[in-house]
Amino acid sequence: MILLLLLPFSVSLKRVEANSVAVVSVLPSEIPEQNVGERVYVNITITNVINLSAYEIKIFYNSTQLGALWTSLPSNHFLKPLEGETFYIAKNTTDNAYNATHKFIWFAGTLAPSENARTGSDVLIQVVFSALAVGGPYPVAVDYPGNPYPAKLSGPPPPLPPTPLTPIPCTSTPAQITVVPEFPATMFIVALMTVTLIAVALGKAAWLRKRKVSFVV
Image (cartoon, rainbow, N blue to C red; front, top):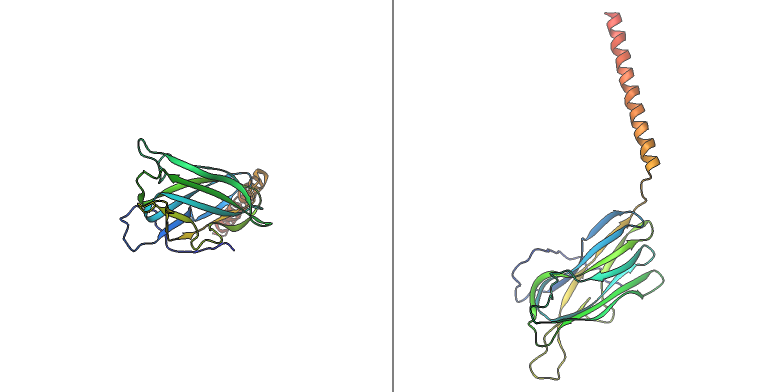
């Protein structure tokens, strides 16, 4: 079952408190009025994380309404390697079946073990969808079934190997996407003509009333 944890979220950068919980979000949180065939761009962001060096996320979507086209790393993504550093993409697939109506994107990346972990808030990856059918609103949600948190966030390992990466607690917030029917050009023309005819009729009626009053006077 996809978790939909609707928690307050802010994308502004701010100082991370020691007792804060990281939030993985799909932004914008509401995407209305996407026509069939149009592309839908969303960002997967991280907020209030401390010492992040690796992450693994699954992004669930309604595959009857949306098709996942690709993922990309923005030029200034949160784990952008510094000069001389490396960011490894361990997993990047967009067409993973979950059930008859849902699929998920699976992305995992990590800094090299010797590199500095990151603290703060920013974009992890960008996802591009294609609107397939009219409907919604449907959630696009970050979740990781079987994991205690909706995403696998990891800090650097303790100094004595071999030891696993340190898990980072987190919550998540989804987005809602609605696909509406495209307004045909012919309907627009008919609507415009109707409004024009109504305006003409009202104008003529007002002129006739004014003329009738002038005759009476």
